[in-house]
Amino acid sequence: MAISDVQFFQGWKQVLGMCNLKPGEQVTILTSDDSNPQIASMARLAASDIGAVVSVLNLAPMNGEKAISRDKSGYIGKTPLEGNSAALACLKASDMVIDTIQLLFSKEQEEVLKTGARMLLAVEPPEVMMRMIPTPEDKARVLAAAKKIGAAKKMTVTSAAGTDFSCDIGQYPVLTQYGLADEPGRWDHWPSCFAATWPNEEGAEGTIVIDEGDILLPFKMYAREPVTVTIEKGVIRDIKGGFDAEFMRKFMESFNDPRAYAMAHVGWGLHTRAHWTVLGLYNPEAQLGMDARSFAGNFLWSSGPNTEAGGDRDVPCHLDIPLRNCSVSLDGEAMTRNGEVVNADQR
Ligand SMILES: [Fe+2]
Image (cartoon, rainbow, N blue to C red):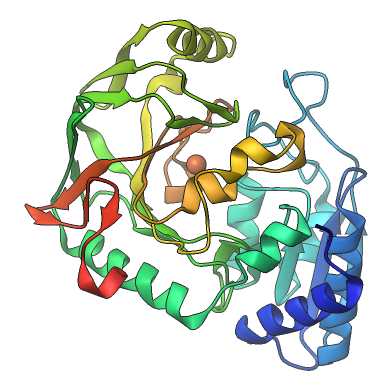
């Protein structure tokens, strides 16, 4: 069901309030030709109603001729900020940027964040955003998980389907996503709720089995049969199985870039109002899949870039793969068991 403007305006006011937006702050709403107009307009009205000084910056879309779909998570290339020093200056001079075009993984985004501007990505359908509107409890669960990740040296993941994977951690920062850009220099995505980090370089080993019903993003497909992924020294060496394995291999090969096979962020979902089923209810192009990435107890692993963690692997191929029914441990302490969050502070 659609969300009314009144409801969405109130939702934006609530979220911007929780992002500590204050009267007089400079807010830039970044839009492009394919932005959701209700997101951009209600964000603008809500920020204005709080008393912020609001600008809307509209930039041309990019990468259409290179990407093989319209999903912006399926091709992470250059952004329209590259070479646009005027637009970049506008964002850098802002206290808060509301991104409706998805700058994620770009070096320009990192530059903007370094100035202290906070950035909130908002691209999911409004009804998904409203169902998963961030709460203080969501944030508390993510911070509790982040504290555990930050203190750990090793992440281990097992499942009855055959996953037996471990990685050394600590080289890269902890990624927290709880839907609020509430501190200077913080990036977040409304809606979102998970904690993760990146394996140390060459520090990931083992087998990950994508079981029937697990989710392959950005394809937005539920796996129909098991896919066995072999990881050695932080790199995917083999992808075995039926159609889903072949699809995954061919997609990755299409980028013709060996960096696509590096392991990227690993962590688990903590959103109690996100659902495994939602992906099956939408036209694939209608959403990014934040339910899939966030549902509580998933093991969310990924491949490709590490620029978000401060690394230099800016490969445009990025897969996010949330698995059900896994058990994730940190230095031997259970965080999830068979797909359920078991750590008391994260429930
Ligand atoms: Fe990702």
